[in-house]
Image 1 (spheres, rainbow, N blue to C red):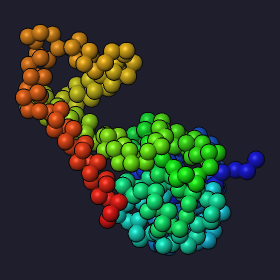
Image 2 (cartoon, rainbow, N blue to C red; image 1 turned 90 degrees about the vertical axis):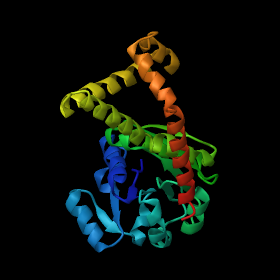
Image 3 (cartoon, rainbow, N blue to C red; image 1 turned 135 degrees about the horizontal axis):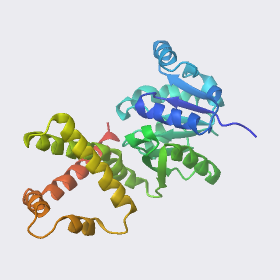
Image 4 (cartoon, one colour; image 1 turned 180 degrees about the vertical axis):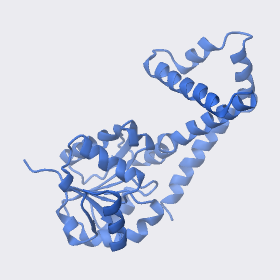
Length: 270
């Protein structure tokens, strides 16, 4: 049985999260995982920071790999497109995790048809991510399942036939962890204003967030029902929720998510 070979272009946090997951679940052998640098100095840095993993520049040798994962920042795509286009082979699958850049543009600028586009989020670093993905019509079903298996190594994945929804995935789950961190940070600061030390406020808020997540994830109740179970009439929770509603917190969050989607759409044009 032929072993899978994967090349990763863009070895920042997210690219390396995938690399480590592929190795952890034995989806690829260490010798068959290639870290791609944009130039020799970059390759040297990759070799120093990730000893034991092969690294190389974009050369025709990349054409021998089954999957090329493109994990550079979307603003940098124009800088690497020409070099990648020159080495790709028709049967290779390109998987892009760049926000906002549509499959049609990837196919056009890479002169390549076998393209998938995916949007993970940072909990992938812990194997607890969620990745939405779409594929060009030219991608065979067997290759689609192969990539899905790779994406699931970092958590869970969901296939979307309508690629336009990926900008919404970017806004909801791709950027989503930052929204939770923002709320946690605000609650911790409020705790400190009430007299707790930073460490005690952090413990109270983070454990509350963790417990609330597990209750939400395992309960058969809706969020509204779970809120009602905490918010007794005339009580403390009701007083807090009244302030949130007066400040249109829900609408503010929705507006922020829509702004993220709009920005993801803009990235495709830059």
